[in-house]
Length: 137
Image 1 (cartoon, rainbow, N blue to C red):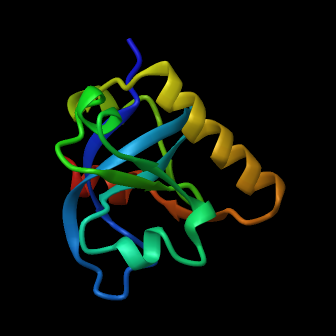
Image 2: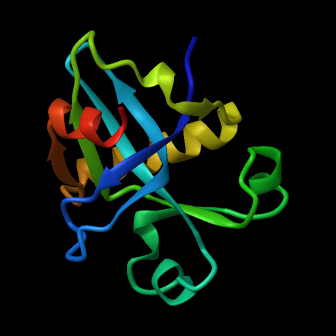
Image 3: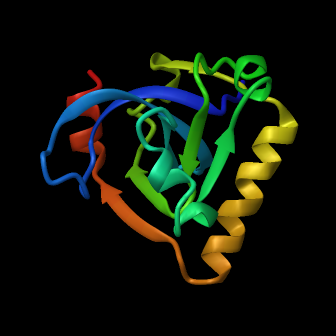
């Protein structure tokens, strides 16, 4: 069984407030050592950022695509920031709320991620398994 979107509690390493909250994350890659997650957020209130000078970093998901893929509101994925969670067999992502998205949307996101990585515009933030599991018991 595979899934593309999970809801997990994260303390984002690049968030100065260190606010921990449940957040939708796109699962870009999963190996037996790590999982690469990308933040999914609502566009509402972030329009200047999403459609501004850094817009190429984002994949936007607007109507009707957002509704067809289970997003309640127009959303975006920041494809320039990867949150790499180191995992072992004791850490099961299947225990988290999860769902799949369309192949078309998944391919569009993966393509943008690959482009940004090739251009050296991808930032990796590492999260330990202990941290992740303590936030998501």
